Length: 141
Picture 1 (tube, helix red, strand yellow):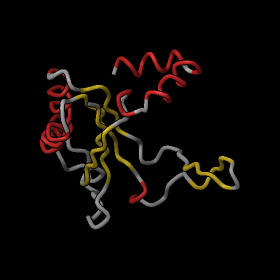
Picture 2 (tube, rainbow, N blue to C red; picture 1 turned 90 degrees about the horizontal axis):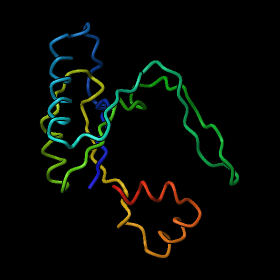
Picture 3 (spheres, one colour; picture 1 turned 180 degrees about the vertical axis):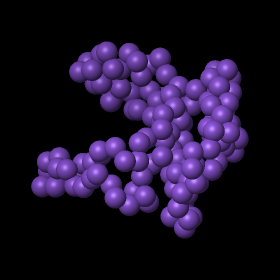
Picture 4 (cartoon, rainbow, N blue to C red; picture 1 turned 90 degrees about the vertical axis):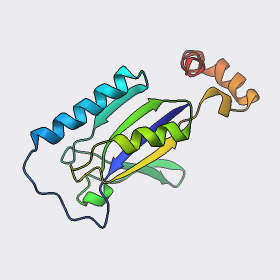
């Protein structure tokens, strides 16, 4: 099963205005290395808080840019991990090992990603017809 673990700031936490901490960075990189060596890491990225971004929604049945860039830190996701592990319990165990201290990582949310077994067979068959390349990658997950 694949899970996404997103990191964000706790809305009740004080902003972290500490200077760059090299040792904290080392702890994160060691955690990333553990995930990689364990064979469970699919992807891991940080998200730049001051980079341009946008939220796109639906209005009148069409996609529309709603807002962004984001001024409030509570709106920001600090980064994510995608891991492939046998269960939610193992995903939780990995999340509990994740370092903390950046200020954008106080809250980790774990969500299971959709796999081919989660899609009803008639819809999976239809997807195979109209998006065969994408469906082939889904079957490998």
